[in-house]
Amino acid sequence: MADRKDLITHWLIPLLGAIVVGGYFLYWQWPSQSNVFDPGASDSVPASADALSSTEIADLYSQESTATDAVVGDQLPSRSKRLSSASFVQLHASREAGHVRVELIIDDQWHINANPASYDFLIPTEVHITADGTQLPITMDYPVGDQISVGLDEPIHVYSGRTDLVASLPERSSDGPLEIKAQVQACNDSGLCLPPSMLSTEVLP
View 1 (cartoon, one colour):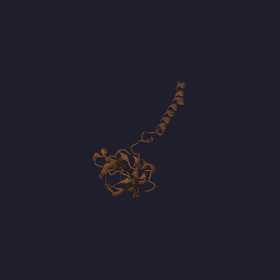
View 2: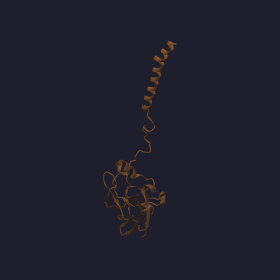
View 3: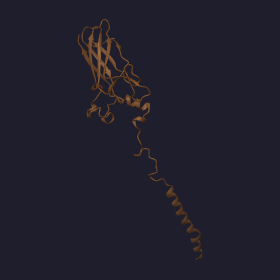
View 4: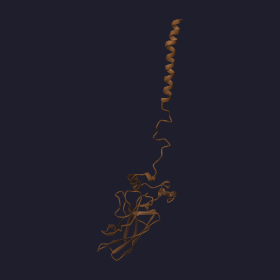
């Protein structure tokens, strides 16, 4: 009987005490669900447009996928998924002796890239003239354009509003109709671009 009491007193009670203390310690040290770092947790703060790096802005600016209403804002109607640069730029042309005057009319709060473009990833405005299906070796007079800031390291040169371009025709150019083509990429003044378009019009003799 005495041996049993000694076993309980000297071994069993201290063992139970150690188990209780150890369990209490583990309870407080074990990481709870609220303390575990979750990189995808909902309280993580997304980067704002103001915090984007130049590289991220460049990627955004040069993307050729069609913009959505949520990104562009009220500048684009619900049919934005079908929009392209041609939705915001008009092309007109007239022939004057050995020259063709090209007029580009860009909607308010939109612009197209100047030629040359300020960065390699931007698509410059380019004019091509063909006669009887053959492209003519024209000489284009591209203006410098206006400077605007879109969050990149340096401002960019763009055409906005009404822009006049003058193309000098070769001396022995055809007297027949000419097809005028202009490649443009329209971007809103926040720096988001639509897919480029090839505008086309015809100039009669």
